[in-house]
Amino acid sequence: MPEPPLVTVLRRRYRALPQPLLDVALTGAITLAQLWPLLSSTSYFGVPWSWWGYAVAVGSSLPVLWRRRFPVTVLVTSLIVSGLYDLADSVADQPIWYGSLVALYTVATSSPRWVRVTALCLMAGGMFALVGSSETALRSTVLYVAAYAIGRAAATSRAHAAALEERAARLEREREMEAERAAERERARIARDMHDILAHAVSLMVVQAEAGPVAVRTDPDRAEAAFDAIAGAGRDAMVQLRRMLGALKEEQAPLAPQPTLDELPGLADQVAGTGLKVAFETTGEPRPLRSDSAVAAYRITQEALTNIVKHAGATRADIRLTWEDDTLMIDISDDGRGSGRALPSGGNGLIGVRERAASCGGSATAGPRTDGPGFRVTARLPA
Image (cartoon, rainbow, N blue to C red; front, side, top):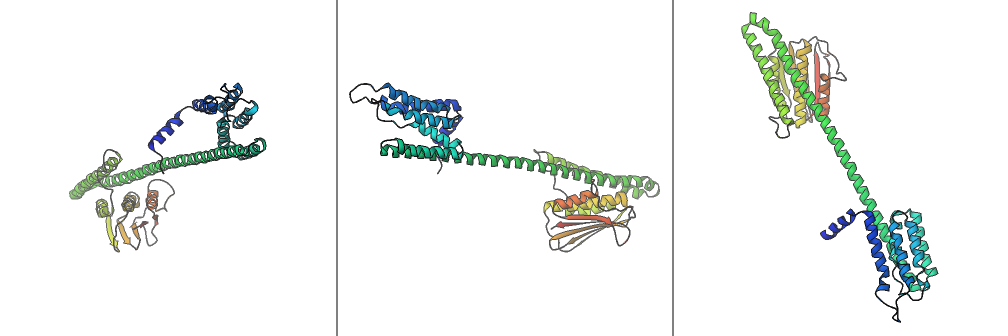
């Protein structure tokens, strides 16, 4: 059951006060409570009570000021002083010794188990051994057991609250670490995208620029197509870079979605503009892909085609998409006689193919073809 709002406010304000001030206020309240039987009544003969009663009431409550530093000492001192109350005849009926109760509460909350259990047992046994009235001994024992139980409950509650705070702090640290890892993954993704976009566009532009001067003299139409291909590659790179940079701005949504499988035919046509024959084939029943798998499929194909243009010296490239039950197989091969190598362990080129496939739960391999000259890149992505 939730506590009333007023109680919550008072509890917060109470906890916000300095501990010394709280101890002074508590000691004052205890002193007043223990003096109250002496202040609110007079003796049967109408004369003031003996000064001894006042001295014991004050003396048994003052040690509470030091209960946090010396809980056991304060408990023993308060018990001894309060036990001297009956040495004088002219005193009021014995008050409730709140100082001893608070001292026992403090021992129960802060002392080791053997200390607090020993203190409770000695006090309970002492009540029946030293107090003449069994009724008074029973009443005092019940009060001391209650004070001990309340102290243990408070200690358990504080330990539970501390454990919850520690767990919350640990979860917060884990969230911060996960956010840092996510930011690192995002930076790596952006680096891969930048590499793929620029490497692809620059490779196409260089190939067309190198062929342009020869075509100008022998085949003007081909030269014009080469210049158009250079311009198209540059525009495509600018569009993709603008799209990526726009997505990085918090105040602006992405300008366009990431490229997906639907744009692969256009990518193949763009590469074909370099003079490379590009065949695009799809088998199986297409099905929707997760966004990360779709982007990975496009980027893997783009990277493979870029490497063919840059390194293979090929005349033909084949792109084959094969839809299986739960996977999409991508196969990009060429007939070049360049130096084909297995997938390297570092770098941004072909290693980016493997990283992209792994990032969405797939896998990728690359190496020389076994059925003739050329190089092959294959990727398996979850569908």
